[in-house]
Image 1: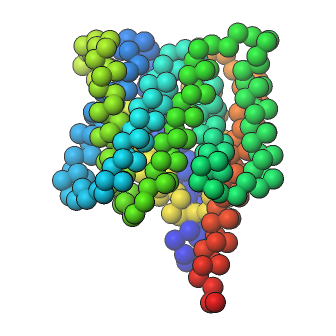
Image 2 (image 1 turned 120 degrees about the horizontal axis):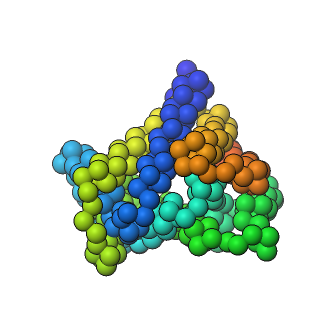
Length: 296
């Protein structure tokens, strides 16, 4: 049995990933506006760095100058995205945050075609158009006022896409552990001045919530890696839809947020577009790999 031939195991890890990421959203939502967005983001990464200390002590930090430049630029994108995300959580519903964050893979597809020279197929083009329809359904411009939180989430997805593209363009073979460590260090560094502008001393309860945010986010990235190792994207990616269901139910039950059928419908369209793009990309990578390993 191959590493990616355990669909039930992969599905289990992906469901657990969904729980972790929805838990992150719930915890940040519970913080409210008690801590400025920049400071909350900074503290989340400082706590994350403390959690990564055992790995830092074991991982040799051998980084070339070119890699360090890319890591630094990625830190800028990630820092901006996290600030926008924390701000959006204080303005709009959990469900809206969840679905608008799914736009990152759509932005990544466009960016990869524009800046990395990747082929842009008609299937990807249709998926992007479908995602745009989903965004229009969610925002409904001209029918209802667009909240600054919506704009912040659109910017969040764009920044996270830029962060991913920076990581993808890294020259040389940086280990996954090194990538995570450098991301945390650079992001924390760039968030520091933003945090100091409106510094408010957090309470122990607020620090405890941010520690749980860092732990849940770290656990989510770990379980997502296990899911991708256990099963193909065609199995794991459709389960992303469950995160929208859980976020909607959590928003309704915990924060008295209304269940918006337009958000559910638009989110479903966006998730379908993301699944299409992900499966298409995985198939393209597999075809390239088979071509590279085939005898000449």
